[in-house]
Image (cartoon, rainbow, N blue to C red; front, side, top):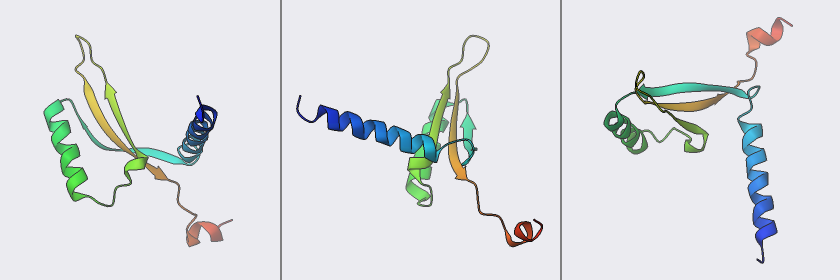
Length: 94
């Protein structure tokens, strides 16, 4: 198919950029919300999307930990927080 190689290359480049952006040495994942109730989960995400325009939704991770008989399913919303530059008090101590 025409263009397939170009699309595949673009997808690979996007994956590499995301891996570099969300690497463990670039920051950490901070949990915004966690629940075991699916309807509460959907309602909270809807409220966040409608009210909070400060969230960068490209840096959000949605985890669904599937439960079994002993543990219920858990829904978690996490936001990637990048490391900040060293503050003036930290820079003077070196």
